[in-house]
Amino acid sequence: MDQIDESDVDLIDPWFRHRQPDRWYALLAHLRTLDRPMYFREKPFPFLPHGDGYYALVTHADVSEATRDARAFRNAPTATVPETPRWLARYSGDMILDTDNPQHTRLRRIVSRAFTPRTLTRIDEQIRRAAGEIVRDFAKSGGGDIASRVAAPMPARIICEMMGVPRYLMSEVLDLSLSLAGGYDPGYGGFPESRSPVRSLATGVRLFYGSRRLSRIGMSVARERARRPTGDIASRLVTANPDGEHLTPRELSSFVNTLLVAGSETTHNAITHGIKLLTDHPAQRELLLSDLNRYLDGAIEEILRLSSPILTFRRTVAEERELGGRTFRPGDRVMLFYPSANRDERVFDRPEEFDITRDPNPHLAFGGPGPHYCLGAHLARRELSAVFRELFTQLPGLRAVGEPEYLVSPQLNGITRLDCTF
Image (cartoon, rainbow, N blue to C red; front, side):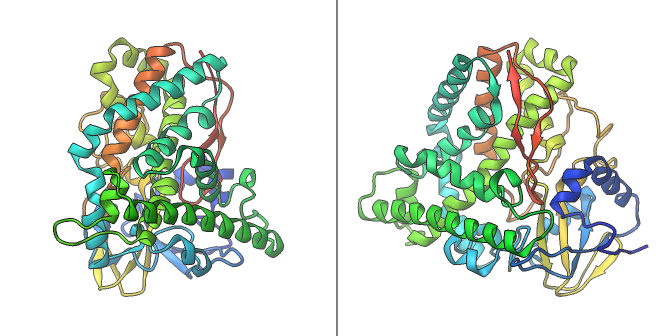
């Protein structure tokens, strides 16, 4: 059977995964056994653009190849789920996620200056200081929700400091980025499961004004740095490099939005999933605590693999290609399912097991090889290392208690609340 009717299931329906996570993962496992990618119809939401359907790429090999072959599998017009509406793109701008060459090459060449090893080494102390302060504040509070008090503020603070966002705006920026990431979650007033046009319109209005406000903050920072450069990362991005290239204020604003809504969510979600995984696997937790220096890097990679903080990205076929036993033609849409690729039995031994000593661990939590590999991967790893080191140094008895509350999202594997004790 090559097609599942929309009346049955839509893999990118956020409510399907939220209500039936075991069935969602079981279906991905079944799809990995088939001889070619299967087609799914997409369930529309009012006021959001959508396609008729998509092919699900679920194996490590297929996801890697579609990511590598950026000529045939294009990010434009949009890589996100759902497609970015024009009324929202007006303020969010052309995100680097949604671009292809030559525009993507130019943008990536410029913004990569923010993520060179030398640049990241310079902000290591900044990352360690932020992690120490945030964890100390959590420790003083006696425990509680680690998602809102550690996991969410940590990456948002680092990105704001890197990009020159004034400290007095950081709390607002964090709230805005969480609200935009929670576009389907009822806790953030997201699109309703009922797909009610009235309630969907209200959500659309909220997202519009949130995106506009976040973009205006980014534009203000960009214009200020262009007028009065300070030598920070934002200044370097909006002032010309030796080749005369720089970001416009609108491009910097869009880049900051991408970092806050997509980039910071990887770190945020990996922290919460990591605490939950280590709580659920006490033997692995004890092994980690026995020698943090030896096991922490491996633990972070295994957390990223098994949690897969980013669930999926979209690609649009531009040239005829054969992949995974199926011929794709221009105009076809494919979805790349990273949690499935990261559980592919042909690549990972005992893929459902949490093993912090797993080696090798070629997970795709930051995307596959090629021009769209996550620019912020090294930054995220540094943040995760600093946070987990502080948590288990200051609070060696840290454990999750109760059941987590999961984010309703087609794209992000998030935890919105995770109570902890120590």
